[in-house]
Image 1: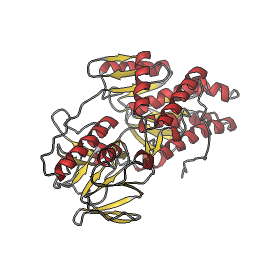
Image 2 (image 1 turned 30 degrees about the vertical axis):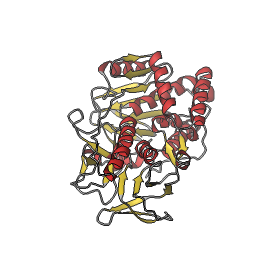
Image 3 (image 1 turned 120 degrees about the vertical axis):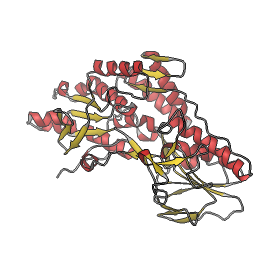
Image 4 (image 1 turned 135 degrees about the vertical axis):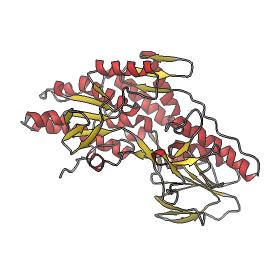
Length: 426
């Protein structure tokens, strides 16, 4: 890998997400050699992926080069690599570009879409966990309307204009709101010779409420917002199969659609070598203690979505969101330094700063520790928080200008089919 030899302890971080970047920034000014490995050379601000999928933002406005984030740190090294295996006996990371020994290893590989073992849904549905997946979805949505113009088959046209989103969490709700606004304000202008009023947006939730992790008031208000936008919300309905044309459920309800978007769950992106039953718990996550150490190891850690830290307040593990990942990264940076200096480490304590979701123009719900509010003010708070956590001044300015332009003009300029995408049906 062309990593120079050093007398400093070598710490390898796998993953350049929120957790991995926070940890690297914390450690890179110390007398340590920090090596970050990721299959992409950029950090993705995942909460805004849905805006890339719906043409509100270009991908470069929510991505930032990892090398640029940590360019001023002399002992930091980044390598573009796929990590295939961890040799815990020899303290080596095995990748597609070579092997590398470590003194300390931190797994921050994040999460991936969880299809719960349904191969057909995995094959034919659309996921939205990465920038390439979001661009694929953007192309497919636009291509569907182009194809709807060309067909004289009414059933086929309706299927091309129907969108089924499985999962009523923040991703599903925010995507549904964005699609509803496109249907209302953009499609009639782009496709005047197509009756876009026939387009349907469905949110299918297996539980009895959407935004399950938020307050009951926020959940109900979000549902009201969606229904006012014309979105159909189906609760207590579980999708069981999809063949590329027909969505079947555990009820007599079916949907004819060319686009099924799967936002029903995620699981830990685990790595071979740490996939034994004694390491892995619910959701394919690595079981860690209060110091983020993987069970059975003092020098191997896991943070972020891939880590499952169980406590009294979170018996199923900390939520798989940005804030726990950032806090774990910062805390682990301090603890690794204490471990090297043979001082006792401090246990991690998660400070819940609240949760929020937007359902379109002037519509959002916010749950803070002391305050809960919805509507226009919540929408402004949502925008401010997301702008604040974006990396890079340029990205903040580009996103802010895009939002202002989209708000004033009721438009989404990035509705471009840069690379055509089609699901192959058997």
